[in-house]
Length: 418
Image 1 (tube, rainbow, N blue to C red):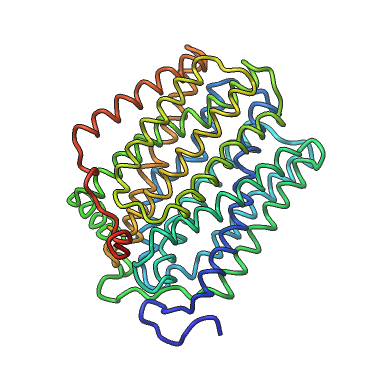
Image 2 (cartoon, one colour):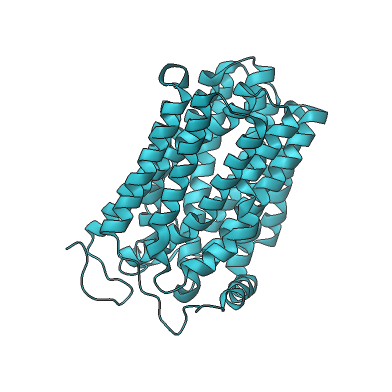
């Protein structure tokens, strides 16, 4: 047995957390491949314009605008987490279908847009379900920040492997990589189906059939009235619009148009970014709990802006690697601390919905940012786009620094260990 017979929020033995990490690592490996393959299929295989690339990237993120809140309410339903393997199976089928199209030589823009859209739909349900499981594996909130950072480390290392594999598409073949993604996701589905017991939600707080709209509204109201959650969601939305939008559109365009490089160089840039994520999480683990995570998140916004301004100065091929690596470090710190702060501040009965609001802010703003960046890059070029995005990030830091809403929020892990 991998878990106890108690159903009080699914009190699990510690090795259940290890099974959870293994499962999400296989999924993250597939995500690492996707990070490289989706934009490169657009700019490398189909030779799409900046505007068309913006639409492809936007559609992979757009379902978050519509479905993440529904996914969050679904995650808070009693036994809702038991459906998580089905969504991973659906995501595996998406990759398998794309491999089929490539083998038949039938890849066209319309199919790529549909593929991107289906990826977004699957992730809109997977994210809140996956995050909803985590606290039940930890037997309380103590050391939650540490556990979230460990989870982030596993995700980033697996993504780095996936990015490295996708960079060898010229040797391995894109269709084989897509089939490998599907296989990894099927392994994830199997692990969740066999080893993880969905945490029970208190029947008094779990939404029932027909109460989804009311449940979604309750989650939104709670986030808006909670000062820390409200400002965290606003900040992450800004990150999604500016940083993800620029990263997923301007970086592949820089690779193809400005530096005249191919898939290997683009995959290497993505690998540098993910390695930066890994270094950041290792640093957080070594350092221990961050007492004031809001401050670190705010300074990450400043540093990201400065790095984008540095990229706008047209670095060399080698210099761009270094800047993207440090961008990954900053993003890793911000993402890990943001998730842990969210988990600590979220009331138990509303956690799935609050996670979905957080993800909605991030991935809801991201497709809008991708579209805006696609059109902006076609008019201004990617260099000026990095300048504008960097300047906006620095200005946003100054606004939040003056407001100081997140400045004094203290981490409960740090307080417990002091």
